[in-house]
Image (tube, rainbow, N blue to C red):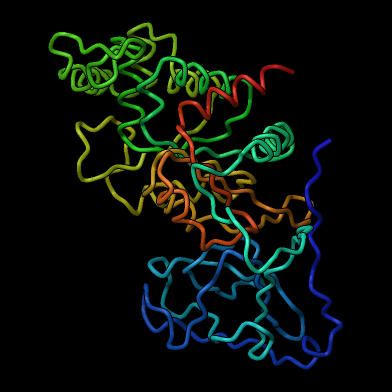
Length: 362
């Protein structure tokens, strides 16, 4: 039976906490501007001493600031600050300025290692059997007791089996939200509408006559109908990732880029609107799985703390996976720390098919 690691809170009876001064909050001098000496937040639980009590920032995000608002610590992006809001200042993190960063809230069982040993990094040579076993158990747990958010690049849409596997995961309840770009939705819908992705048959990979028009024809048709849902209904679409999302009511956020064709109607052209929509989905995420999209992965990583305060007030770990065939992309988030980020170097199409095979077996 899968069991989450328990959160070990700081012992606020320790002398360093008792003797610590109250944290200092200064007014923002202008909209979108923090006061000098602002404190930048991290992925870890952080506490601030306010009127003698230690308050946790409940919804944190790295590279943002902490605002004291109605007796609570609200973590806010710089661009959303309003003049006069009381912003935390201080650059120390061990109680000296009433700020404490708690990096060891979810202690792991670690074995002693020799100073010199092989295969410490995550690479294509790493054995991932244990990672998969843990991931299967985690997904089964969070299907019922958490919220699983998937961050996806378009690679899945190029393969029939991967599309089918992802659709099964959605319809089986293992997907609570999808964050992606215009390309994933476009090529997935092209696969459902014309049986191709960028003009290639999604099973044989044989290029079809005038196939380079297919993704544009698909986009144009979706725009004619006004929405992905209307396109699915009008054109009789009965398969694919976007079809399963619409069928099951799974929300998706499509963040646009400067290279997008079309784009599809629901794509956010404003990057900050896309960022806000992504963060809305990530606020309650307990497991995040990023696959074959480096930029969206980095964006999601920056928005996702290592912990989540649940409805009953308890604190649980957030699990963060980065899956990519490129070691560079996987290790890009390595500086997030072992607390929540884990990399798997593999073909993402094989990865999602393997998840389907094992999760559907029981």
